[in-house]
Amino acid sequence: MGILSKDQIIGRLNLPVTDPSSLVISPLLQARSAFDTESVDLRLGTHFLLPQSPPQPFSFPGAKSSHVGHEHVHIPLGRYLVVPAHQTVLGATLEFVKLPHNVSGQILTKSSVARTFVVVETAPWIHPEYRGCLTLEIANVSNTALLLYPGRLVAQLILFDVPEAKPSRIQDATYMGPVYPEAPKFRNPQHDLRTIGVDETEVPEFGHPAPTRCPECYAKFGPLKYECTFCGFRELSH
Image 1: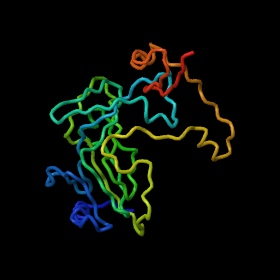
Image 2: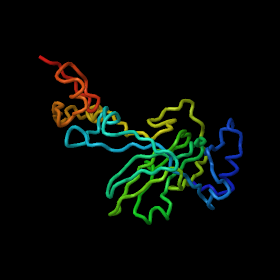
Image 3: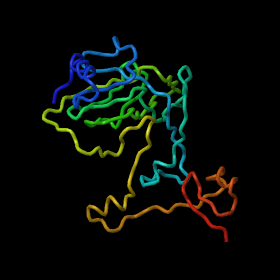
Image 4: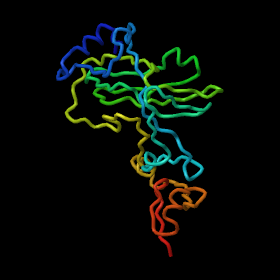
């Protein structure tokens, strides 16, 4: 598995999009300066997922985890997002990427960004035939707040040749075709562990929503029948 050079990347970008070996990175702004000898610079997009405190004192990696615990915000070009010290946020690349069946990729933080003690990556390997904007896990590990400006260069995409790979007949992936940052997707732990022979899995108890936990939902619905849009708990009044 070899790293694609600048000329090899440009060659694939110039192929017709219908060619199975074609590569798409769009929009490729300031294309003349976007390439290094073996990488492509990527910019920060305008949509973010901000982690929120869950209604319970832990994060449960289950089926509902992608629906709770994050707030979606849009920061237009020219504005900035404040990330406090030692906090994290999910962002996405400004560019939409289509990898061919015989190319994989990896995201690395640009050195200038890394020297401000900010870590930017995807999960972190990009599989062949991926389509979509790349979700970025952004961690501010410095001791001061960080200002993120959408549109600025934040990462480098390195591409690898995958010899003898063949196109898939069916596109089937957990994360495929997103244009916004995506929250993590899990199945319930019981389901995953059952596949390896674990019949009983301990699950923590989830407390009932209360004004101090779900004030927005409680104020809107009171003690009537409702489903909390924050934690998903359903309750019937008696």
